[in-house]
Amino acid sequence: MENKDYNTTRAKLLMPEYGRHVQDMIEYVVNIPDKAKRNEQIQAVVSVMGTLNPQLRDVVDFRHKLWDHVQIISDFKIDIDSPYPLPSRESVSTKPDPIPLKEDKIRATCYGRNIQNMIDLIAERPDDELKKHMIKVIAYYMKQQYLIWNKDSVAEETIFEDIKNLSGGKLIVPPDVHIGSGMADASTRKPHIPGNPQQPRPQHNGKKQQKKKWKKN
Image (cartoon, rainbow, N blue to C red; front, top):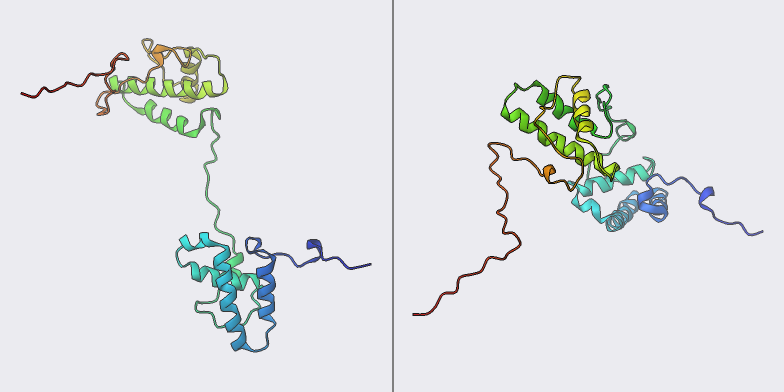
């Protein structure tokens, strides 16, 4: 029976993004007895590697990275004169330091941590007109996020209760603040914050402005 060459019987690809042919070429160069010939052949292989991965051209020192990849694909067995310092096996296999994450849980996953952090900041502010407007803005945004999952409507009392729970009872929505229940409710328009230089565009009630025609004298 004819022997078949399956991927399961081949050597493991050390860098799959380059494919089997590049790994075979590097293995061929490793077995060349003459070092001068190896240096000549590996130049052609590195050129092919750069052609197969053009996205590396956007990386700083991409040529250096290609020569490092040659060492990795050869399993650090290739003996060549690299134009760059040779990487060590330890420097490649060393895992990066873990990124510390906050251990406190998100109080309401449907709103996310950013909303939770903003509510905490608003709760620490002194009671004034600006704080009232900030509460209305964040309540409006929370209603929008809520309606992403519930397409019908949501009572504003539900949003206000969520604000109270997220703040640990520190933030109570004033009784004269209203945001409506549906996405198309007129009262759900984004409120104006005092001191905000961005003003809404003037409304023309659907009528186009007529350009003045200048008559020749």
